[in-house]
Image (cartoon, rainbow, N blue to C red; front, side, top):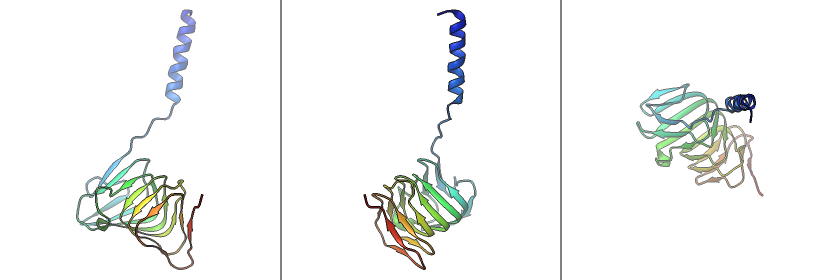
Amino acid sequence: MSRLSTHWLSRLIAAAALSLPVLAQAAAYTFPTTMPAGCSGSGGSYTCTALTLGYGDTVAIAGTKPATLTINGNFDASNALINQAGVTADLNIVVNGTLTFGYQAKIKGNVTATAVNDAGGGGVVLTGNLTATGGNVSLGYQTAVSGNLSTSGSGTLLTAVW
């Protein structure tokens, strides 16, 4: 290979490498010490604005238990692992908006949301109760809820059957 070809090829490889997306690393959040942006609180009472967790993010509760996490807006749980080292009674999540599960999200806690959407492809495991206060509960393929599943108002319960 000529020197010109080698130089051109090395620049092409470098440009291609720079154009690749940077792989995101999952975040580890611990309430109350390391909370996601937009969250605040103490003493077992935490409030977040609309919250989106990333792929593989973890959320742990280290402070006062039981803790209540209130999200004023929509909550996208991606495929996060929430309170996995805790017990269900440690965490109550209140979503004043729509809760959207991601593929294989895992949550230990009781969840109340305006509406619930499992748009991420299923495989979600919720260890606790799931309640929708004003909308539908739509669960994907192989999603499991170990507690009570309910909706009030005009909402309906929908599950995927394959």
